[in-house]
Amino acid sequence: MVCVARIKTAEHLFLTCGFAQTVWHLVSQWCKLPPIYAFQVRDLLDLHLYIDGSAKSKKVIQAICHMVFWCIWRCQNEVVLNQGQTSMQKIMGDVKGLSSQTVELLNFLCYHVS
Ligand SMILES: [Zn+2]
Image (cartoon, rainbow, N blue to C red; front, side):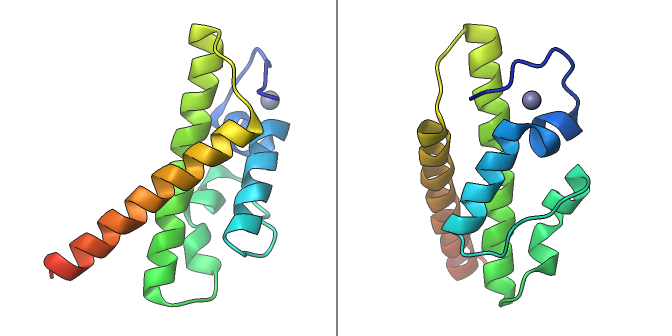
């Protein structure tokens, strides 16, 4: 479930927290990536640089990673600030939905703006 730790650093929120680790694990499975090993937040931001694939697939993975950060952040805020409810199912639904929209936008921009 979502973390209730009192001290939240970026490292904890996005990297070492069990909640975040589960999200990254599910994202790696969804994207058919090898398991994600990150030692600092920078490793997650640069993940697309270390995967095999075309320039386009790297861009897609980069966009998805940015969405994961956003979804973890938003999910934590929803729980902490609004006493909202969340679940792994909901956050993964958000990640997949927002990522699909972002990838469509990237495709649109690549096709129309070049
Ligand atoms: Zn935590």
